[in-house]
Length: 144
Image 1 (cartoon, rainbow, N blue to C red):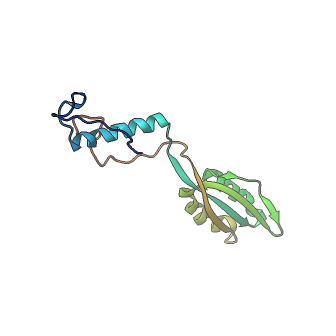
Image 2 (cartoon, rainbow, N blue to C red):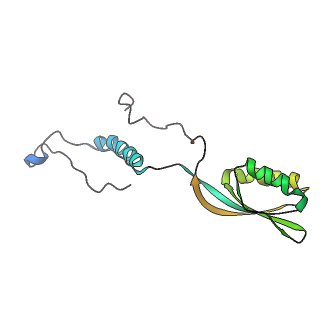
């Protein structure tokens, strides 16, 4: 965010700017309020990184792997059979890719191969993540 215009008061300036002297603290207190309002008006959403995974697995393990992908919230394309291997492509939250990688040997008898690459960002589904506030809440005047 960039502040493009700001006014201040000065005790001895032109009549249009006379008033109590603005201080750095005034701007420190106002900036978080303006930012919060701008984010709300913009309709921002919390997003998370996603990865595209390509899996090569034995055909007899498709059911188990597809079930695991569904539990991890993956968007799965139709599997394809190439010789003695099945290929599955899916997009899932990056935070769940490690879980899939850990489960894959057990799901495929140690014969599955996983390749992944960054696929972009998508809005977080379900409960939105939060973090503990590190500074005073600008909406609570008593904390400032």
